[in-house]
Length: 341
Ligand code: SAM
Image (cartoon, rainbow, N blue to C red; front, top):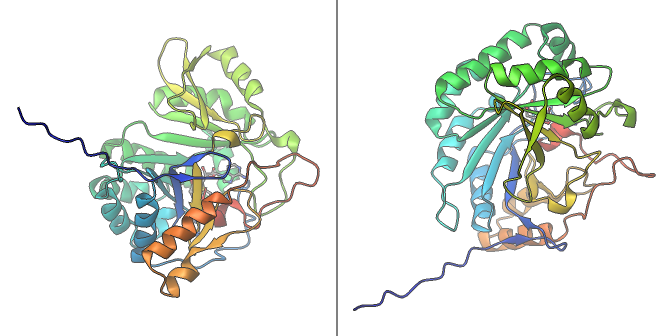
């Protein structure tokens, strides 16, 4: 009998100095956006930062994957505005993780260009799609996006994505007291009717303007109680420790909602994320005050080995947690639209 030796493949891991393994990379491909959502944009300024070439994102993302990144989410700004996005998705969809698995590839979009791009994105190999939608009422929706006609376009976009074959589409809804908290119950119905997963996100102080106040945040317990009053909720067990959303189904087992509560129930201790901005800077936390200029090193001609060492060092410097709501809290050096959410 012959014996086949087992070859142990060592899977590299990005680990921070707090013992957290980093396997989730968010990449902003532009900080331009065609919406002016009140909780994000001031309504005045546009893009502030440059964009790398598609080939440059690819080179950097490949390095991150070789170091243990398993999930890549393309975001912005509005990623669907970015010329070359389909080519980037096509190339990334072919990549394998060091363990030989398929890369978990997702896009977060406001959905405006999905009627045109959902089918091409699916054909390019995109795995998962998250669409931001902050109201199920047309008037409230357009008061938030400040773009006339946006409600019908986004709804058409979500339906185009379903028709293109995307399943388990996630809808991100940022809740703000006094703006869209009247939509909570409607969203519970929307999740069931449209067969989408609605994820309510607590409003964070990441907007361009100065709108955030602790009272504007609708904390998780209040949200669960309000939905349960109309449709009882049952918690769903977490799939892994770094899952950010608390997931629930309705008592009849139809539909799913999730609650992401970075303010009232921060999950920094289980954070597995790192971000690359459109201009090639590494941000180790949404609330970082500083960033690591990976692009500058690439432009200086550094080798893949040196760039990888720089990524490893940046991850080691990841902050332990954010300090939202604490005395002396400072807003980060960039707002959400310029970081990539
Ligand atoms: N344009 C795309 C979109 O609308 O989904 C991608 C970029 S957007 C910055 C990514 C996500 O960040 C969206 O789901 C948005 O709702 C969320 N977001 C933006 N500002 C936020 C804030 N201040 N607090 C919580 N989430 C926020």
